[in-house]
Amino acid sequence: MEKILTKQEIEALLAAVFEGKIEPDKELAKAEGTVHSYDLFNSESKGNIPNLDIIYDSFIRYQRGTLSNRLGRIVEIKKVGAGSYKFDDFLHTMPSPVAMAIYKADPLKGAALIAFDSTLVFTIVDCILGGTGSSAVPTTGNRMFTSIELRLVQKIVKDVLADLEKAWAPIYATKMGFLRMEMNPRLVNIVPPEYQVVTMEMEIQIEEIVGKMIFAVPLTTIDPVREKLKTGAQVDMMAVDPQWSYRLSKELLEAPLDLSVEVGGAVISLDDLLNLSPGDTIMLDTPCGSDLVVKVGGVPKFMATPGLLHGNKAARISAILGKGREQ
Image (cartoon, rainbow, N blue to C red):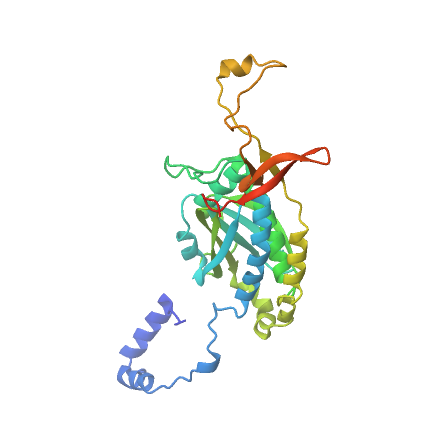
């Protein structure tokens, strides 16, 4: 970075030129003839932290499963890109509204933040409260988040920090601690405005909805472990276990599934529903003797013929259902 002269230094320089102590032409000739060495093979910039993306790759593997289990939805996470900004410039890139979680990574100094855009926040809240998540984003302007919504997002933040702690463990043991939630970027002051922060933007897809999560860590926080990241110490511990796929497949095959056979359905009025009593008969829309739909986890998968086996009601699979048609 070029040195900026103070007012006193500028006045002293002008006085030296007027008195003839400095000859501008000679000084410019010296500057033009100066040669600076540049190492093309070791050109690591101050804002570029080596191997930091490996930690985020590990985090994504953990968080994909954690968030899917928390929301009960299929979640995909991918990196969009890393960057380095002055903290003040970074805050100006934040969307509105935005939910920012401030956290500390002990024993590293300083604090860092995670930002969630409104699409991600509203989708998370809708899923946690039992909604579909498909139409969670309000269309009535950029309204701010309620305290209840922030409390629900805080649960996700704690999951994120737990996975981030596990991702950091092979490189540097840390203890991630949640501090607070903020909506106004002007109230966030984890470092002075001119300090550099290293960012990583991620795209979170929940079913069909796509939101963004952005990590921002001050350069002063990561500097103490820069050499460990550069040498990649213990990075091999993060490599995929060759037996992992086998064990995962074995566990999945033993996972219990909820299977149900749908006998039929009917449409009745509210008045008829209120007047139902023991002994009443409801006419179903399934013809007698026709195959029944077998659902796995609430999703139609098979057609089956009803019957009896060893004194119990049973269903014999007659067809496998594909996407909208039998196979």
